[in-house]
Image 1 (spheres, rainbow, N blue to C red):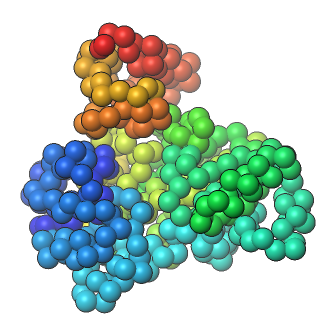
Image 2: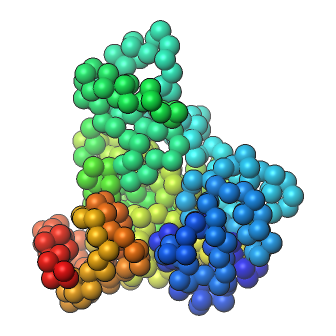
Amino acid sequence: MKRIGIIGGGQLALMMGEPAKSLGLDLIVQTPARTDPAVAIAQDVVLASVEDAVATGVLATKSDLITFENEFVNLDALSGLEKQGVCFRPHLGALSRLLDKYHQRCYLRDLNLPVPQFFPWVNSPDLASKIEYLGFPLVVKARRHGYDGQGTFIIDNHACFSNLVNQVDKKNVEFLIEEFVPFTKELAIVAARSVKGEIVTYPVVETQQEKQVCRRVIVPADITPDQEDQIVAIARKILTSLGVVGVFGIELFITAGGRILINEIAPRTHNSGHFSLDACKTSQFEQQLRAVVGMDLGDTSLTFPAAVMVNLLGYEESHNEYFQIREKLATIPHSHVHWYGKRESRPGRKLGHITILVKELNRELIERIIYEVESIWYTGGGADR
């Protein structure tokens, strides 16, 4: 298998470009616009929405198999292609359990894996009593298409909930309601499963979110060996149960009492694994390609004792490429700047990331590095105007 079709042409597909070249693979991307990041590295492009199953049929004629860069697909429409023999990795049956967050929660619960208490938002007579049982604050999530905080609401009281009800009534969106977890840290693990059923995991990381958007990733997470073992066991159980092929990202919470709960699963490469490009022997992007084409999986061990990844998020409406700021960031020792080539900046948009390799997992040192990066990025905009 040499021709890999990818549904989605954003930065996750872009970062498969270099490993695809080294592995001798061609990437064919289905994406809506020629300005999308992965178009620059693709051998061929199908210009269409990622939900356009007819276009995916065209992609299938150009590819030996198809994988995914995002979850915004129409599974019902794609199922016809799978029945015709199109190879999707991961398979659509696995995605059907995960793309709707309520179905995902039910699946994990039925596996006896730890998840927050939850229920679907249905306007029924017992809705008020269910909310009362969970108590405030609580979390409301769109069941489909939510990402980077979009479609997620932290509700502090009845007044906030009533306000959200008024907004939701105008939209044709289904929601999930779940308990708010008073976590001490947010964690994540990236894991991969091969065609042969081999599973490898990357180091558990700490993710730091602001407004439900990932700002930073610290590698490895400062947790106990037992907690790491629990998280690795969770990842292995999920991938084995689903029978998937490819890379998955799993987000988790840890509470003050050491309890670990699963937050969400992403059936693809994940922002929390970007550090692997520069800090691991095999990046998550190379691993994804190795998995889907049937190669042996690569070594996931760190090449440096620790690392910190900082997302370079948009903070203004502009068409700025931020060349001078990126050059300044690149002067930080042991730093690696990755730019996604997006033409337009807007607040919260992921424009790139920087990974800094660190000689020890020293919290004070890491905080200084984060401060330096964010001071340059968020206060240095005037240099490029």
